[in-house]
Amino acid sequence: MFEWLRSLRKKVGKLVLPDREERSARNKNKINLKPYTPEPKAYLGQLAYLLLSNFEILTNELKYAPTTQYKAELSEAAAKSFEKYRTVSKKLSGLGVDVTDSMDPFTERIDTFHSRTSGVDWYEAIIKVYLVSGLLDDFYKRLAVGLNSELRDSVEKALSDKTFEKFAQKVITEGKAMNPELDSRLALWGRRLMGDVLLEVRAAFDNRKLAGIDKSASLSAEQERKVNLESYSKIEPLISEMIAAHSLRMDSIGLAA
Image 1 (cartoon, rainbow, N blue to C red):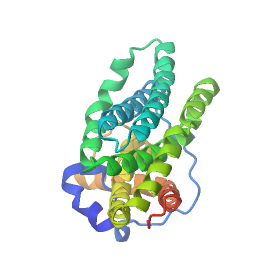
Image 2: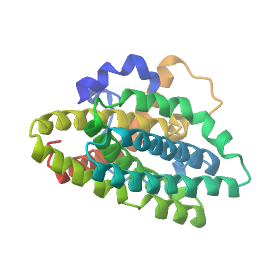
Image 3: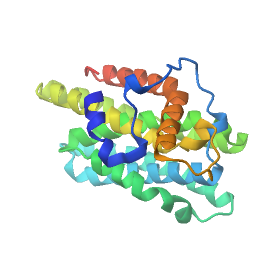
């Protein structure tokens, strides 16, 4: 996985994950995300667009469902996915801000993320949403710690819905039983997705805020590199937890992480 991550560096610039040998110190402490939660508009804006894009992916996959039963069940899961988006978008409106204006700064980044993680068939699309949305939902629930209690409770409740997760576990397990060749292909695809998820998580943070550097400070390229390394060190425990959670999700559908 890390060899593949290194190959992405030219594409993703300063949001890359540093080589292990470059990290000056290993941070094993559990991270408190409260100081790093974005302000509500930015937090809800990027979360809303992630949820909306998940809904778009699921509805697009309806026509490729291998059975009518799967199509019907996926439509129910997609509807639940849209409810997550509606909950978050209503909270944005409640802040007195325009929902689309709040999402716009993040659309290019998130669309690029989805374009890099587009599966070749229905099963790859389903496992992509299962793994990616599961990890990112967990991440955004944790990142909500810095929001006020009303916003935090609403976000946590919305992101706790497991309708699609249960559907994905069922169809992937059944699909592998009918076609054993899916096993190795989906396992490889699932491992590759983890790298992209980690890059998306990095993008949700402000590197300078993580490193305690003033946002307006003028830094050289070498100083920016050090900021990148220091910011990674801050969230390394979170990355380790997410990798462990990814392995558990893969295990739950019988795939080797």
